[in-house]
Image (cartoon, rainbow, N blue to C red):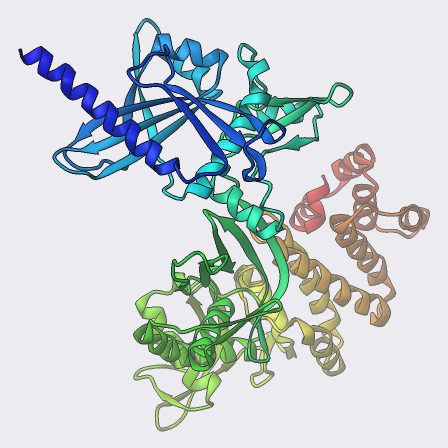
Length: 602
């Protein structure tokens, strides 16, 4: 008796499922159902005939969709990752005739019902491959829309897809990657005809799984379904429009995306706007504001943006003005306080000629105290009390930058701190036992590889400083030549770890060297300056034919010294000639050549 009861219950559930589905489509002018009772047709329960324009006659008949409808009893509805068992025998039949499979969850002891579906198109082949010797396969099903119009559209799209796919039931399909490798550029998809508006079509494609077809023969007009599908489209574009609050532009460009039926605008790393595409989508627009910039100037810009947006409530993205409300009030107030400190620090770094992006994430607690001292002294011009501090030069490492500063101590013990390159202090250099001269602050950078380390070098004042020093003593021309060599050496050391700084050092060394070529009072130094100019340019690019000829002419000078000839040979890539000359040099000369940056070309 128990087995009979189970059979009766199963039949009752199937009837409830069938009746619920028929009730769902009974008012449709597009769908005409021919569904039999009691499973009279193998593998299918019947057909759904589809008509265009809601007119049910032969002229408007679009085709028919085979349908299978099953019922299953549940204690409560399961909507996420719900699976239903499909039989291999049925799937083999569906391979030849694509089928719309519907399962109705019937809630026990209730009149509540919920429909689920699976479109058995190209999926059938995959299921059959995965089943192996098994007779059944648990397969993922999706909730069916409760909007009749949307279901009608879904069936129309299914019908069109099944017509295009049926001839490829036993074919090996191309993937998108394979199609592109074959040079195929014509692709298509199927969507309801009512989506003539481009934006609405994009919304549909981003919320519904679609198949993509590759035009494998234009002559025969053959479209092959790609093996990648179905899937939802994501539309992305980088727009170069301005992002403004009032009249200030904070960002140039933003990322625009349509995904899952929503417009997502990403502004740098600071803001993401997720909003509805139309009034039918009741999901609230969400705005996420973050400031994740690593470097000081970007952090200031992001903070100013967040504060301004909070204060005005209007954001302009391209041609679009959006009313915005920032809900993170505590976060905005925190930004205001950080902004004050960041701007003070930025002002100090500008005064110190620092162009290297300052990494805020690398600051230690002790370095934070140094920042406070910088703001108070260099920024505000105040004296500070540093017990035990002596007048000296300071090399401060703060985060990812190093600053060379001077410290002066008054009689009261109060300290002033300033920029090493502001010409406030005298740099003395002893050229003999009896004579000390003033040199430029840049010559001090020859020590301890400071050209490689110091980030507050005032590059714009190098030549003016050299001119002033040379007016006071002719030996400063030689010191400027040493500066050129030190800058080239530093550029070589940095070329793989700090490309921009390396390029800048070469650029500024070249300008200083050109000044030396023009102003150098000693004729014997001019060939060396020309060699330095050529070795700088050889690092920047290939030497021209005219430049090489200048070097060749220097070899013809009967008074050319061996040091000059050695440099010329290296610049002209005449390695054998250089080697012969080098072997003939005295040991002290060899040591000198090896110490010069031109040794790079050996």
